[in-house]
Length: 439
Image (tube, rainbow, N blue to C red; front, side, top):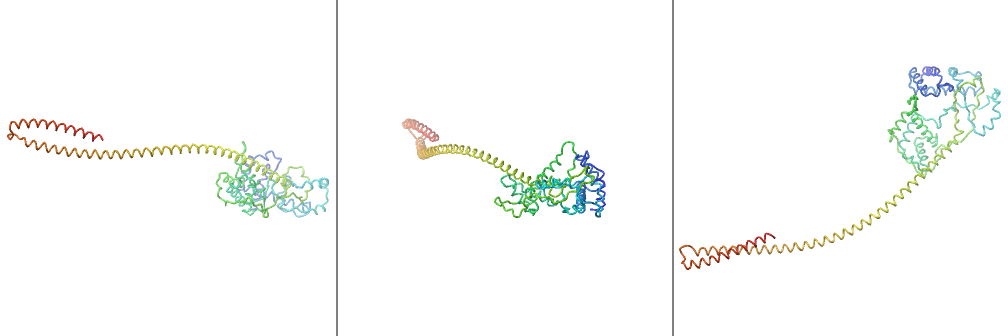
């Protein structure tokens, strides 16, 4: 970045004391901070996140230069002071160095701590020099990752959310798989990865839903948009789906958990600005004293979570077992009922078979009787035709003018008797036809 822009940024930040002076009344006022950074962004011509990031980098650089200068000579006047150090010297009253020691080292050094201001320049120059890389933000609980690595980290965590099932060792195995896929197993362990994810979620929640009366700018955080995409579910499937093996306990390729160690940096001499407001910038390993406790707390928390998860699973399994037992009894009752219904259906089927056989026999009898009726009908038709021929013959015999009076009388008697017989036969035929039609 252009040094002119950096100088303008420093001059603008200097105008807002609450951005660097912890004793200012609005030092922790999120609304004032957001408004100040917005004004600085408009003046400098950079985005708010870029302004904040650049300022932190410049401030950390000044702290490193200040520490390196004191570590070499114990007095800034003993060597050429960099122009950058002079330019940022106004920030010196608000900065102090904090050195982390183990409990054993703390006890060992406490008796002589009061004599440190009276140490000679010779003894101060013989102390080990603190590395400029030893400075980091006090809020960092894991190694710093690039924006690309953080983006991949979040995408893998969201895509492989099913691996974090809450079962025994599931979280550990899932984080190990993610770190190994990213090639970060030598840079951070699973506890740091888990803590980093929790911190990102908490920060996103705080920026997404600020307290009443607070004016915050979520875009000030570089990863807000990424976490917003993750919360909305738009990052699912954006990274490869990983597989874990429950029996895999090989940790040779992974970074071991950090142990507490004694910092070898030098204590800054007491100066005239000791009582002035200061900004605390921690050295590398500031949080390492409590890191063992943090790891232990994480382990205990995971054990408690796993125990609670197993207890919940056991209760669910017991409940499912009772439900299955009830379902088994219900199925047995339903099976007995089905068996009874099957027996009833079998009896009904046998009854239907017998009735069908009886109907078939009755149908055969009806067919036979129908055939006999048809035969009788044919015989009656034949007899009717014979009677009609006989009637015609008799009528031709008794034609007018050919018969005598005696024959006429006899003929009339025979005709009457014949007519009576014919009427009887016709009535019989009619009755018989009606009988046939009724069938």
